[in-house]
Image 1: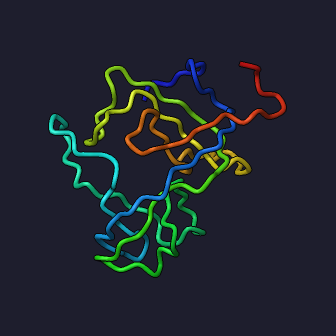
Image 2: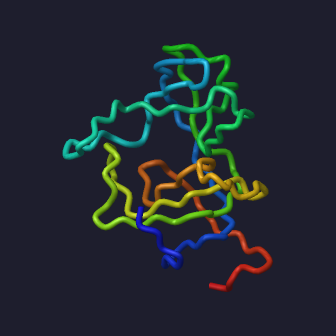
Length: 158
């Protein structure tokens, strides 16, 4: 990841309001930790060195240590393979803790390939010292994300 402390649009410390419209997805698998769904937005990248199976894993227990912006509208513990559920992001406040910029765009196995990734934590969550918490927002994602910067004390005027 190329780190950029002053990207043109988003900076470490920004507080963002993020949401994504609920969209139908089919459940493909359920484990003790995750529910896997056919991801309704991206498509596989035929030129990628990675083979993406079209699925995305979401935490089975939304209150457990693993945090994801995306979630199912219903309690994921009630889902079974073959079920249809709604996947999206309820309006959530997050804080940007890192920004990655990629040129060429990052090969993830999915299209579109991202140029910029924001690593975020819930707005009130302390910074993870190990750097393994949080979630990633792909700017210019195929998912219909709505991202608004929230003014807060100490934020620079733009």
